[in-house]
Length: 145
Image 1 (cartoon, one colour):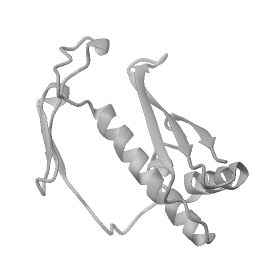
Image 2 (cartoon, one colour; image 1 turned 90 degrees about the horizontal axis):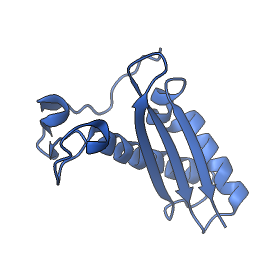
Image 3 (cartoon, one colour; image 1 turned 30 degrees about the vertical axis):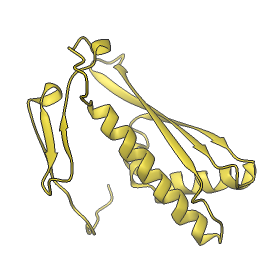
Image 4 (cartoon, one colour; image 1 turned 90 degrees about the vertical axis):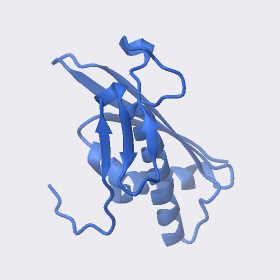
């Protein structure tokens, strides 16, 4: 396991679990949570799931990693759109697991070039990619010009 010296730390607290309320210590994020109907919950309108938050966080983080890698190679990936689709389901061994599909599109970069940047961002830079590697399935769809 890697040891880090944190450059930024945020705390989030949730009361009531998946049917509760969460917020960050700085007050920037406040969310009401609800188990979706697909998982047997009430699926209350205008509520989020942990999967909403994870998908958004991973997409944003990966986009930042891609931009970082592109700049190192004197390329511009600021037009890239990253979609992260997160699914939750039952594990064969019991319990639940997540899977993610990342779709990265940037028509301003040639296909092969974008694929190489995505690979480097995933393998070397993105902390979400490091955290998920070997722990959940993450697949990529890359669409360049």
